Image: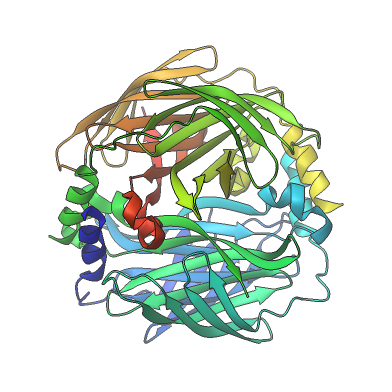
Length: 131
Length: 131
Length: 131
Length: 131
């Protein structure tokens, strides 16, 4: 019953105290930055992307959750109508607080093209944010 | 300037009308189900996972965004303290409305173990939800 | 020492006997198909994609590894010069042998654009293959 | 016909000359390292992981493909019987040649547990390799 152990492991993730303070400005490797505010487990804020579908910087509203070192948040990009989800956790890299994330960015595939072009719907990547 | 075109493509994702109605109950391939409510671009609801770290079903609050066919949402799992982010879009599969998603599930790596065990922090997978 | 357990779990993945026979033709949800040949842990074959960057079907050589229920393989797409990696395992879905995979497809970002467009380099998705 | 453009884009990825030389030793952020040898589009080598399911370093044979700046490769981990697939490309980060990759690591889910525990089959992450 091997994976039972892993299930138990995930289940036993310890009380995460003291939680880190995610509040404030974070910047990624592309010079995008975001301003986070935390209320309980709720994450809100504004994301300023250094690169967008139109080439210019673009802003989007942040909406997410956090517990302990973990954080996940989405940004809805307008007017393009795409969504990015970041999922990750705070780590110390050489003494620097860093939010390591993986992300998915989904864009609309027109209904008529879903059969043969859905494979182009989602980009994936990794972002690291530091203060 | 090849990827400029792709940037334009993402930027030109069309007005998505009429948007699908995500409201209601959706079930995935594992018999997990979720009840979604939509207010503007905001997604709320309750996720009932058929499998959890403790083996038993577990519920979590849904928090996300939607535009047109696209949807992304997170669930914070208590008491384990992990987070799942789903990112995807509604498609028709053989006439059946289906939300195809990719997801990341992040679990805490204790600080002392971050250097050599961070690689175990995140599970990935795909879920399909139907009504 | 929670994640130690998960480490042990991964380490203790049991002898996988008898291994499934991946040899032969497999088809995914897009009607792409692939012909696999297995020699020891080595996977070779030909992938026939129903959709390509040019719109027409395209073939690519398969190169990968397998152990037990697990399989991973890459296809180098010519002339576009992109690469897809599938990673997954054989499961039974309603009595049907199914290879469930996640994939990444990487395309080149010209050097001059790496700083601001690298985020567009990689697509992600899920494929299921049945005989 | 929006995504047609993106399809064209992917299709038109330019001749990538001169290709980088992936040959030699590369090290990631965990102090894992790998020695790559390139023959045409074929990648072979040895991967020395700083962390393994048993806690100790572990080696595995590299098997992959490359074209231009792009590279993808798999390692079959013995005796645990898991597989990692890396997919990425060479970029310059502050003048340093860096292979940025996303990876999937698949572990076996025993057949009896596939229904409710398949979601634990695959870890995901990002690695950066420098010389």
